[in-house]
Length: 230
Figure 1: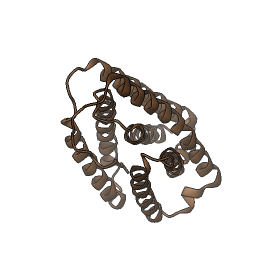
Figure 2: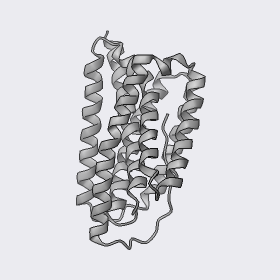
Figure 3: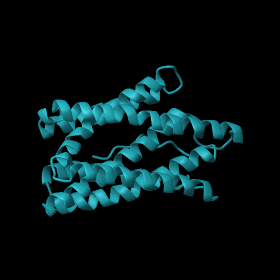
Figure 4: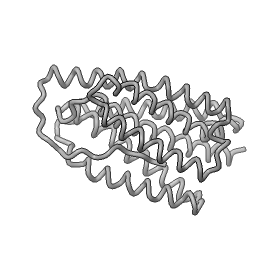
């Protein structure tokens, strides 16, 4: 499934260059830190079989309720001392929810290699989008509403495919998700650089969700290809 934080209307960029650099630096640090609870959650999920213990229907409900509940709580606490712990708790939860897919891929003969490939691919996309955000001078805020609509359509189609169980639709959605959320990374980092986003917790949440969806989509595609090669 593909999730996204609520789209924030475009506002005027009023922060100074020093403030923008501080927000961007804090975003990168918190984003790196958020990977630790994600990996821990995925490891615990795979080791205990927690996510596999839930039926697919229950797992979907837990995922949707938990993800949107955490995102709401993060937005409510982003300006307080509870903001960072809440974000890290969310990334741990997302790691646990990812463990079903990770466990399935690990069950393949080359599962570990596929996971590393998905991780490397996600890292390459992030570095590419981060570099582009420094090179592009044009204001990209207007593309946010179109990307948000695309993310909602992906979410609806993903929920529908949960019942349809179409491999072709799954591959199509995964490819579309990689494109949409890669663009979201560029959009969100550019908003920070241009001073439209001044809260590093909100900025980290947006970029984290995009990276999560890119990694999940890459892993699903590689898992499907790896399973067919056996």
